[in-house]
Length: 265
Length: 244
Image (cartoon, rainbow over the protein chains, first blue to last red):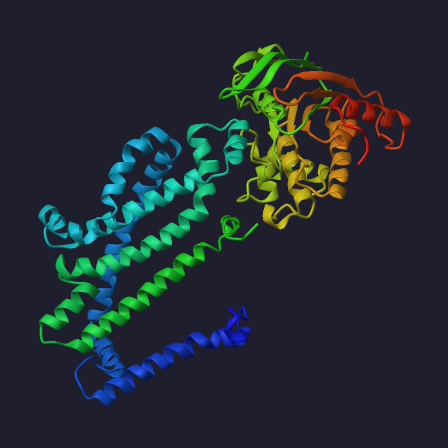
């Protein structure tokens, strides 16, 4: 630490600066990108301006809304289906150690397999189309959500379970009134991370398994005439929507009933 | 007899923690179970609460054998026991799911008042001090109108001033509600200030060494010679000279 200038050690810049700094960084990045493309005169990547024109072109053709909606539609259904199965399964495994010990090897074996490895099987089962993509998102979300839930259940304070039982709660009532609220803060973090994974996977899945969506846009723009401006336009859209989804999930962390899980006590 | 411990023995692995405990508590009595750390006093309370099944012997309440936790007997943990995801009034109402909405509201209001949390009904536990959380947990327990309260070193995590105030509060509540109280502590002063009877346990394995009647009316004067005599008697019983 001794050699660092003191400003590296200061905790946070003043609030006004904190609001401006992220945009400054972004602006500098775009500027550097523009200068690099202009000075190289090459065809390494399209310029930022070309990418923005690409987005406008997509919007005018009506493809922008269509592809964004298609991608979000697949993520939503795959992710929600995974959530509906993963949370009850995770709670059950978390509370019932024997079940967990039996199922855990399967989960651990499936975990290192990239969801993308399932693409051929998805196409074999469901053909090229929405169902395949939704299925892949479902697979990609199911495991992390289940494992998060199991972990969160293990971390519940035993005094809370004891208190719940003391007031006469058993089985389902205990799960509803103590277990679920007790795991919610950790579950929300897991849901946020998993939605990020789902968004990564939808793009890859759409490159192979369907004929619409942002992933399809990227691969199609390249295949049908080397339109790299549209490729980069697609990438920018994916990034922006990913940030938007993450911000949406972060709002859940501010709900009054879960704040206790994040504030250091 | 309200609570009856009969020939209770319990092991953890090969270690005997409780050895042949016999004890009876009458209704409305305030009994402190006093002993050094690790003497099994918390285990004894957990057995009474139905959270741990004793290896030998049994606990009965009103002649009925204890076989599990029961809302008629509420266990108060250190302040960690309140539910952090519920507000003060939701915590107090937690056990009132069988009551009608009107009665629930009345009881919550009554116990918010009783434990001095008025104005904090909508607050979450993280916004409360340690003493307030502890009072909240007592209120949550009292709201279901149990006949027995088990308190396991409830004030252990509080600072000494708050602890003294909490004892006064607890006595006031006990006198108003007349519950049977079993209170586990390692604090000799605390036991003499609170209890009708102090049950002194030995170090592991826990055995009942002595039961001391504290025959001083409340409020107790801490400089009263009788108070000092009883306190020193227990100090002596535990084998401590009252000097630092």
